Structures are given as C-alpha cells and as structure tokens.
Image (cartoon, helix red, strand yellow):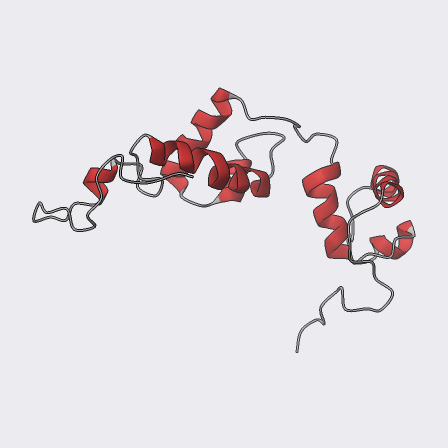
Length: 152
C-alpha cells in the first residue's frame, strides 16, 4: 500500500548536512538539473533520501534564493497577500521571487503576526481585534480589548 518512508534505510544520513554534502548536491544539480529526486542521492554519491535532497536544494541551496531580512515592501506584500489568500504560503511565495513558502510562513508566525497583534489587528481576519472579538449583539464575547495581550 504505497511507498515506504524514504529515510528508514539503515544507510541513510539523518542529521545536519555537511559542507561536503551541500557541495555534492549543488554540483550534481548544476551538472544534471533538477530531475528525479529519488535517484539523485545515489547518482550524486549522497547517503540521503531524495526528499531530503529536494528540500535542501529548494530551501537552502538554490542560487536564486534571497538571503537576509525581509524588506518593508515584502512585509506589506505578505500582509496584503495573506489577507487575500490566507495561509496559502506557496501561492504567496510565488509572488515573492527568491523567498520560499517555508521561509514566508516562519516569518509570518515569528514577526508579522506579532506586529499585527501589537497594533490591535487580528492576523486571521485582518480587522481590528475589538471588531473580531465582538459578536453581532454588540457584546465583547471574548473579553478582549486592545492592549490586553501580553507579548513576552
């Protein structure tokens, strides 16, 4: 019933990637392109599974990846796209060249979400917290008011 998990083999490395492994993966992808990830590890002489190689390449080693902090324009675009698309990180990443879906998701959860909450904005609805916490009868049903949240 389906494939067996790729990293259960006894001869597969599972820890942090070494510089030598990164160099082998980069050299192989440059020479042969992004092809079949399942056969890449043995062809490149790596003791990793194909999924691990693919994720390492996509999230860390691709030459077109942007490194460093997000710009203010990127911040604003992420907030705008999140209000339209929700947590569809791959769709958001497609509109931010050089940024990965995982990187954007992590940045949202560690930075932008906190900024919005600090400004009294619900990061899910993108509306003021007082509006989001108020039911249709006008009572504050969650008992939240702006400034009641502690961000330590």
